[in-house]
Image (tube, rainbow, N blue to C red):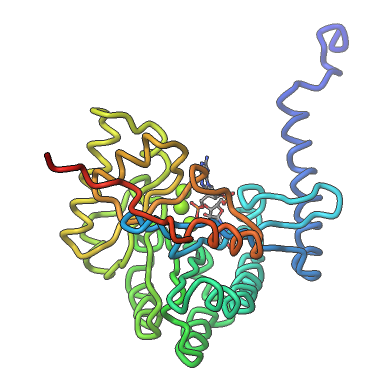
Length: 293
Ligand code: C2E
Ligand code: MG
Ligand code: MG
Ligand code: MG
């Protein structure tokens, strides 16, 4: 009777849960191997200065080079790496690779060129092999602190404030800038912006995506930009995908733009090519000043 009632058939959610667990286990084993073999690469996404139209920074975004599946995006493995103690080693690889790339970047794009490196709150707290102080020391000794920006998220400021304050202090002393990523999506208090001496604030893609004239998203972007500027913080908008978003953000006084409208994340050599084209003599403000009549 049980059989007739379907007792022997798997319920779909059971199957998918089991499958998910098995798939994650397999992925974790592969990720461990990838960490050992350093099967990663960095894609650099241009960040453009709205006043000059030039690329003055780029964000380093890690990719997993999988032998069968090709390039795997961080959305698919960063959380897994964090949950299983692998984020420190991956992040260490990212830092070392950025250090290897920096001389060429400075040579081709200028001594002041800056690379942004993401650091998750989890990784910050684990203070993997003292990496926070090691990075700061390395950057300070090699006089490259000014070429690096660390992107942190609001959750770091919320739950590790005293330790975070200390670590951010060592970066600051090395000349490293601190940028608050995904701003506006978390729960942090605005007071943190001042308390932690944030240098840059990245308006999350969620606000940029629905930017329209007279939209509440535009009001929020304008408010974030005005507030940031009053606190001496420069503003980056991420996820800029079209000319209208570019115009509205420029009119609102945004300092830097990043997104597919300019370029997807690129391998090192393509980034340099892209910059040569973008920064050529023709570079001009992204928003032409209105002609006074
Ligand atoms: P994020 O730091 O907010 O990085 C921006 C993400 O938005 C990147 O995705 C980028 O490719 C994507 N993006 C850029 N422009 C556009 C656009 O115009 N439209 C849309 N729809 N998306 C855009 P990606 O590379 O998949 O990275 C996802 C997240 O993974 C990053 O978000 C960051 O939090 C994390 N991540 C990346 N690399 C690292 C790393 O080395 N360490 C750590 N801890 N996290 C990393
Ligand atoms: Mg980021
Ligand atoms: Mg971001
Ligand atoms: Mg984001």
